[in-house]
Image (tube, rainbow, N blue to C red):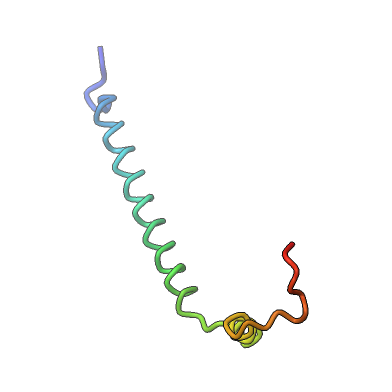
Length: 66
């Protein structure tokens, strides 16, 4: 005989699934926030200079393919 206050396995699984979904949603939301922060960071000046050199075709004397 099952005690009257015992949870049914299906109800327990549903509760666990709900908690898992909530945790996954919270993690996903936090990751999106962090990703947005990274996208909004400015590029370092050295990287911008390198991109400009590449756009201008400057290779620094290394014209041979690797």
